[in-house]
Amino acid sequence: MDDNHTASGIAKIVRMANQIGTFFESKENRVEGVHGVAEHINKFWEPRMRRHFFEVVDSGGEGLKPIVIEAAAQIRRPTQLPTAEQAAEAAASESG
Image (tube, rainbow, N blue to C red; front, side, top):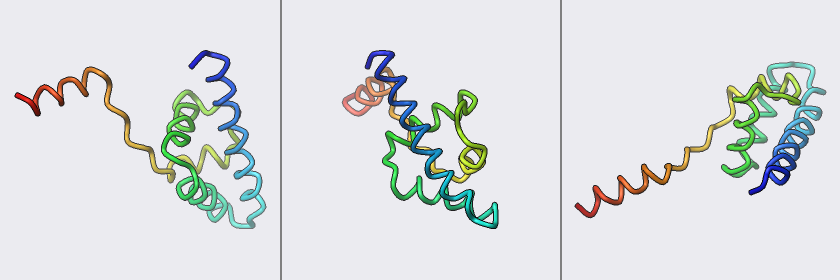
């Protein structure tokens, strides 16, 4: 993926997360709103989307609404894909 595609993909993730945040900001109870953001992302975002989301969060959360950043603690992190080195080591140990 080139840098422009990556940047546009990240911008899309931020925009989508903030749209969800905007909806749940309307809840009178902040705790319910934060939980709603997390629940929505956990239910409807595939692991790749959540991985990109956490790239934004882990790099400081630039552009994310406070309610979205707060909800990140309740959002399931997708399992990390093994590196090429880890995959090679696993394959070697299985065959050896």
